[in-house]
Length: 235
Image 1: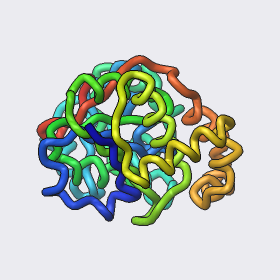
Image 2: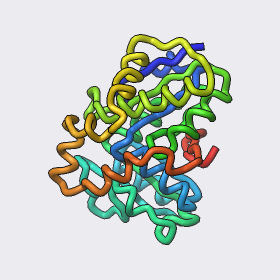
Image 3: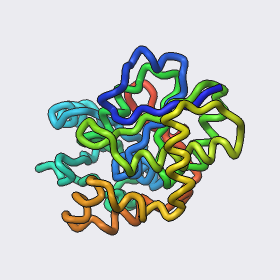
Image 4: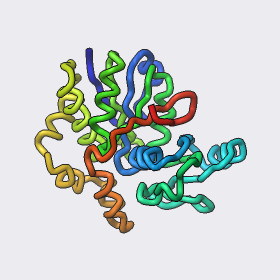
């Protein structure tokens, strides 16, 4: 079996994902938010691609919290931003989180043609690796990227997940997957690599260093969110 990687949500060819297992990664910060919200008792996370879709979805669901960002900032009229630190158990327990971000939610929804779609990050790297191996299918790690292009932070996170997968079972790696693994193994202090990323610098300029430090905690949670029929719940 094989592991491949897609470097940005804009590069997804939906038909090519059929019969595959996908792990979507947007480590800074969308998939980290999703993992955190579900760990803290959210009933579901509903990813949508536009503010208009978020507002319409809110009207069709009960017990809703609106969360998300545009240009890394909270959307006017929304309850929460894209900071995982806001998604505490007191705020999200038993709520449906309708969620839209610049990159992550697009990558999730565009991956819907895959056989299984898991939500991954450093927070649950080992857990999502084990779940992907259990599917016994070829695996594609979909990096959300930043504004449609390659993002260093998602790339090294994908490498960390690949490293965990290979500790469980042997897979053939495509060149890009192998490169991500090499990058991870060469930068065990992940932050020393990520701090060179343009996305990192944008978040730091906005005073979001605490978010970054949180998102870089490896294996903080032993849960795996799964996207199915338009909704993300714990697998």
